[in-house]
Image (cartoon, rainbow, N blue to C red):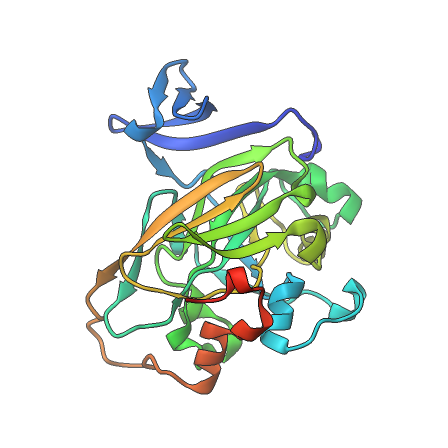
Length: 294
């Protein structure tokens, strides 16, 4: 079934009274468990709605973010070239309502609100036209990153984007909507900080991305493809609530908590180089007034 075709369907994975269940929303405040019982959303703990064998992420896919970091807006989508990817370890997986940990000594913990594609069946060597039939659905995601570590790992982003819990996804997997017609918004403590209209801002279509990756890599059910972020990724403080809302998908919420510094003092240490601060803070003067940092 084509993932874009209605009716809308949503499935979540939750813990209720110590047991794990699949569930679907029942109104605004309840869930219907797979066994038929209706329970309050407030009474469950959300789990990630899929179990990926790999999490693949796109570096740049919004024209607003490209402009913010590169200082230019190109004339056509073809002018942006081809996608560049990186991977997050599966141990980054986190859920709606989960904690995002900022270790002591780090100051550039940046949010990136995103839409994630969830793969629905083994996928290899397909065309973009076939890609929609290989998607199980879509979910909200936050690609968290410790930009303090940007000057190491030769651009692989392993220690920038690879910390445990740095990939919250959820609350559920949604199909039966046209994801191309949706809008992504990120809120920091209730204030709008990112906004991207997918039809206007996205460079590489989701069908393009799946087909591109599947030329060389077998994508398996549950695998995640994070499709990048609009302009205005900025550092968070301990205690901040970061939320990503995508029309048609729902709202993913996570809070930043503090933790002690890593015990080992070996390896690259967090720093504030010009490249670190350039990416961490972007360039506010290029953004609409309502999205600028405060």
